[in-house]
Image (tube, rainbow, N blue to C red):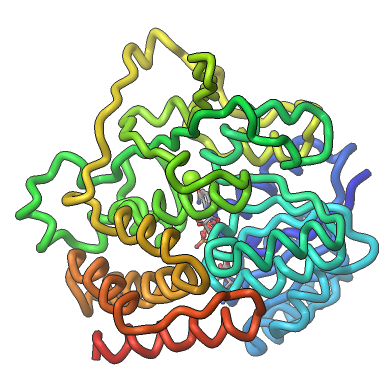
Length: 391
Ligand code: NDP
Ligand code: MG
């Protein structure tokens, strides 16, 4: 029986994870669930899974949850605040930590899990984008195991010659490059001139995947793919030039590894996050996930196109930040988070997102990013700078 802490249980990845856990009650037990302030949903999850602990970042929300649980006679203990998130991530009893908080807020609890040597199922790509060097070295130092949940990285992981041995310590020999697939999001067929006036509602209506709001906007700008390029660089230790992106509108191939002998290995399946989550949970075994079998005849064809940087300037900015190194990627991430929030609040145009990030990267001098203080400081500088542009 594995004990699980699920950080961000009320989100899209959180709910998909709980769906799988509910299919395998003989293998997994929920130790802790966490949310920011979705009281009603966290309450329902507590009733269903009876975790030892529920954490709400927001103190008032935690008080409400406490009252509701008391009335229902559920014995789950309720905690609140950032330190409590770290506490449940590093708790001794816990074997697996699912890192599914959105954005920079996930960094400290995920880092706490790494420092406690946990098996980390990483969905929160922003943590790695902010602090790749530091994060990977903590994983190594404390003997944690990092299992990628992001569908592209999970696909690559499945196509790499890792087998059942310890994680990423393959020597990279024989690999020419990896190819991350991208659906292109809802605006892939729009004229460039139309992008200026697209709305948040249009941006979050993803053609293939159902996801949280922030990552849906990131998919529309393709910053999501940019963050994934950076994530792949750190996870798999590949050079920037070895990471390619191709548009693949069906989202059936989740990514590929191109070997020097000409073999290209792809992982395929329906676009449903339960597949990579189940894969990471059970690795190196396989368990059922509830995902429908892939109907190849129904899919019919697989298309591939170039991911143009004029249409997706955020993708180019991500490569640029990765090349620049140090905290450049933390600056990119922070400016993006602020810009996406402003776009969702109708304060800036869709095309303003890339402009704000570009300006932040030019205006703020990156540091080497080898320690957490630097990362958090440059993250804060980028947020303040982006806010000042928006205001
Ligand atoms: P959602 O927005 O659906 O969920 C986010 C979760 O994080 C919720 O539980 C939310 O709680 C919690 N949360 C939000 N802000 C904070 C905060 N400041 N402190 C603590 N908890 C917080 O996001 P997704 O599930 O879509 O994405 C989660 C992560 O997984 C992201 O990093 C994303 O990039 C990554 N990912 C997602 C995929 C997907 O298909 N959705 C695919 C691949 C990666 P509350 O409900 O209370 O707000
Ligand atoms: Mg992905």
